[in-house]
Length: 498
Image (cartoon, rainbow, N blue to C red; front, side):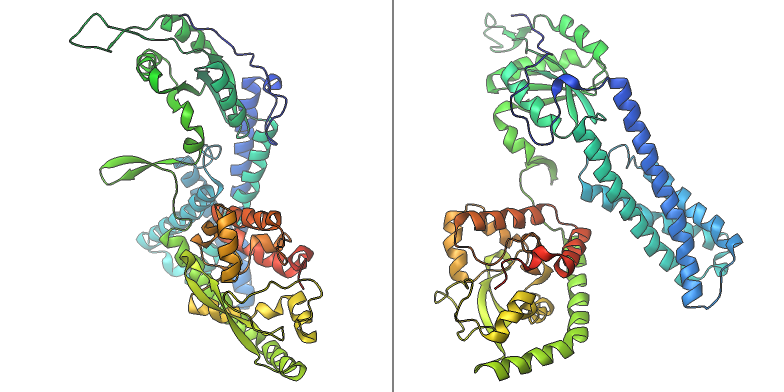
């Protein structure tokens, strides 16, 4: 069997939302040049922002705390040195060159880690040279914070811009050759196109002939025809990667072909075509002295859990202090408006699906819990006059700041549901319980997108769950801050609140 080229693959009538027409990709040299220019611009932007952040952080500290204006002759060279060290760390660890193939959170975290390394090196150098007495320790701390924020801002913006350019076809992240069944190659090419991986050519997989005549070594590969021609056709294409798409019975052929492809200066990958969905959600992981394919992982690492918990404690404590007058006024209004307690506790499911007791201001004439629960509907007669105002403004949720301090909830996370509601939808939506892989929150991504309130249809709850799972899969500290700001200022956060 001879291989056949099908580089002019037919384009499906419907492509993914962010895919690019295979037939109108720009020439490789231009795409690579544009990618290089974008990466240079990104690094230059970060250099400028880091320099400015380091200098103005020093100026701000001197003006507000020391009530003096710092000497530019000291802090301008220092700021340029810090920016230069940050640039060298980024280049040395190939942070920008890997931006096309790493998640946003990794790219941002690498930037913060680089800032810590820069200031560690900076302080160590000033100590060794015995010039540390010339620098204010508080100024250096403020500079580190300012530089860290500048790096996060610059990288967030450029990550978004670069991936938009990749999705639009303006630049190529990777150029690949596919080898395998034409239908499998077409499917893979369309999926890869959404991430800027462009298929420049595709070939059928040559079938290996086994050595059936040798009873001592049955099944061994005796011959793989046409590999020389295949390698010769791949060489001038100058691809970044070659992917061999195989089914189970084609493993001997793939191993023989991989040996022949070793003559090319490219990365060679083998992809089981029956496991594309599994491979898309998995990562190779080191597990003891073995290598495994990790298909799921805990949403938050111990470090990110600690960061999120520290922020929750600080935000909840500050919120209770600043909002204490409002909490007192609301408590009096509830007592004057209707009979009953100011607060009530309702059992809901929290982290790991464990039951928690959630605090709320009482907004209804009843206090339903457990199986005795009926969701609130528009113009519900059970809602009191004060309760209607509290629910529309989300003020009824403020007592949950105590739940945050107790560790049952977080400031941001999927909103907890009553247990009866949870059990009902867990049977209808397969991924529903995955919402509980993080702590529930006072506010969340679904809420600020308007998916709150009545869940009288399965579709409404599905949309809410989709947003909650998106939050879990894309969590970052900046994402939490964004949701908090949207909760305060976005109209959508108050939709369907009654």
